[in-house]
Every structure is written in structure tokens, then in C-alpha cells.
Amino acid sequence: MKSKLGIYVISLVGIDLLDYVRRAMPRVILSMDHSPDVWRQVKQLSPNTFLLGRHYLDDGEQVFDQPEINATNFFKRMKPDADKMRGSYDAWMGYNESVIHSDIEASQLSRFYVQWGRLMRDAGYKTAAYSFATGNPSAGFPNPDGNGNEPNYWLHLADGARACDYLSLHEYSAPHMQDLQGYLCLRYRRAWESLPADARKPIIISECGIDGGVIPGGNDAQKGWTFFTNKDGYLGQLQWYDDNLRADDCILGATIFTINAWGKQDSFSIASCDNIRDYIGAGGPPPPLPPRTLEEAVLQAAHSVPWMPVNNNAALWKFAQQNGLQDQQTDEIPFTYNGEPYITQVFNLGIPYVKVGDWSNIKVIPK
Image (cartoon, rainbow, N blue to C red; front, top):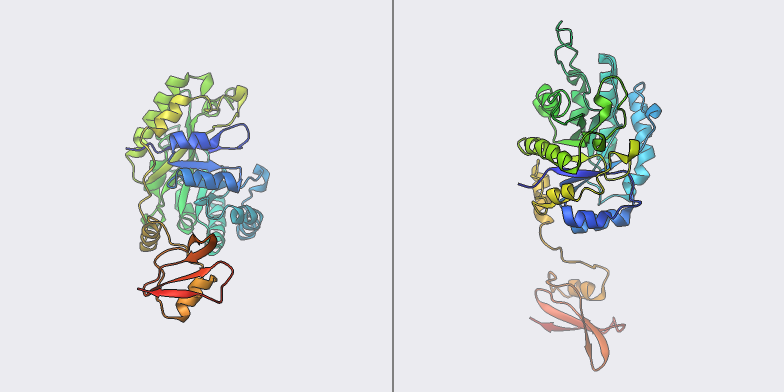
């Protein structure tokens, strides 16, 4: 079964992304570097790789008050990038690692996603809601002192999930990804169970891996996997995580943070981990995502075969319509006769042809 792991791309500078994709064909990639030509090539190499875009905002710009106004402003800011990447990215995430402290803030953030999701949908884009940091938000776990349970903010976040197409979450742990599992890694299962059925959207783990920032005390912040294990050890932990992801149909995929140099001593980078790349690639190309609606099933079927180009401004096409030759059966076919260039094309009831440039002198061979 194909791995559900993928990569997080902060920047295309200094990495050979096309070679990586050619070898790994990952299930999902998150991109913060919106270079249309590169990502179009990625889609050509691996059409079923899911591409999630992120429009960067400073943490201080991600505010909860006036959620509809802030969502509209965020939409306007990111729309030029979204328009530029139309046809390459499959969806966009919203705010990154919001932290909520009350029912009111949870409801405000939900309202933000209702508005942003609507604006994006009306513009023809799909969306991923929330992208909460690992261990967030409060989800009804028992309090550490054993006295009752913490709040379950998912009860107030459901409308935002309903308004978007995917749910985005982050999952890290340290020193091992298995530490505090359920509370950190694999916490997505709690979110899925907490949401009403109509708010349960396919989940993208848009960041995952080993991050020392989860260790109490703060001394290990921004320490990635190289502080805690070696390449083989990290692959083993990612395999454990991937085995769990593949067991859950609700998970679309997970991006390992990051292929770029980041953190203390560049300790998060997996650029040199050929073993991880080859593990991701071992299953071959990712399969198409299962359609969730009849419309998606129709689009998936339509895109499964080559489309015949239709140039309804071409002379042969116009001639065929005027003379009742019915539907085209081929694209335009160039050929040479006695050193002169001609074009022909096959239609149901005839094969028109013309010398290039002599558009008013089209002939037809009946079928």
C-alpha cells in the first residue's frame, strides 16, 4: 500500500524538487513557494500527488476578533497567489497554528473559516481548515490533576470544518514520535471522533515529525530529529506513524517538516535522507483520491483519458460546422504535398483539407 507520507516545502531554493518527486511520487506536498512553472511540472510527473498551498502570515496577523472581516482580508491578500497557482494546487490552508483559549475564541475562529471557506469556494478553490499545532486544541482529555476533563473546543469548531473541504492538523512528538501518542501524534483520531458526522472532512497532517519543542522546559525548542536519532531511527519512527495513517481512511496524507534547512543546526531537514525518500517512493505513484461527491467522480472519469483539443476558431472546424460534417474525430493534422504545407482533420461525415494560408479554398473528401 502506498505511503501516505509527503514533504513540506518552505522554499524551492537549494533543492531539486523535480528529482525528489520523480523518485518519491509522494501522496501529498505542502508548498510555501508559489512558482507556477515548477509546480506544473510536479503535476506532470505525479498527477495524483496532492498539493496544498500555504500563504504566509506573521503570527501577529492571525487574529480572532472580527472574524468575517479578517477572513475577507486574508482572502484578498492570498487571492493573487491562488489565481497564479490555479490548476496546480489542489487546496489552500488558512491560518497556521492558531491557539485558542476559550469557547469564544473557538467560535470566532470557526466563523473565520465559514467566511473564508465560502469566499474561496465561490472563487473556485478548495480549502483546509485550522492547521492546529501539535497537541491543540483542547479536545476533552482528562486534566493532568485527575480532576475532570479539559474543554472540548471541537464542539465550537464544527461549522468551520463544515465550510471547508479538508481538515489540517500538525502532529509532532519527541524524543520519539510514539511518545504521548494519542495526545500528540495520532491525536487526529480524537478530532475525528469529536466532530459531528457532517463536519468530518478528509484530514491532512500538514506538519509532522520529531520536534523537541514538545518537551517540557523549553530547552529543546526548534530541535529537530537530528538531536534525537539518526536517519535509520527517524525512518523507523516515520514508518510507525505511516502504518497508523494507512489504517485510517480519514487521513489523506502527512507532510514531513521539512525538506529545507530549518531549526537549530538545520536539524529538521530531510534533504539528505535518501532512505526516507526511497521509502515514500517504494509504492510507486499514489492512486487517485476516492471521489467524495458525484461531481468529483465525473471529473475524475473525465480526466482519466486524453482530451481532444478543440480549436473552434480554426478554419477547418468552422467549415465542418457550416457544412454539416458533425463532430470532430481528430485534432488538426499537418502534412506536406509537393513541398507545400497543408492541414486536414477528420469529422464524422468528411475529411476537410486546405493549403496553409489559403483558408477560403477548403476542400472536403466525404466519408
